[in-house]
Length: 70
Image (tube, rainbow, N blue to C red; front, side, top):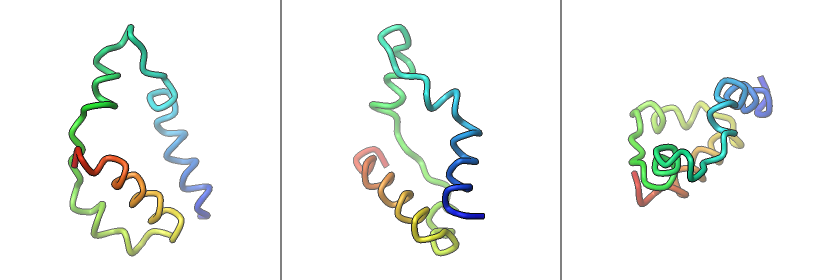
């Protein structure tokens, strides 16, 4: 499986939820994306070495973007 295939699998799995834009009509969803606490399962960090370099970078970048909420 290539990086792109793995990425597409996750996007396809959660597409409807991810692509729905937060709006004033859905304050709970907006609050989730702006203020939600991010709690990692230990496997997220333990499995980093198993990821492709591109996937590993994406995970680390995502964690960096939410570091204040980890």
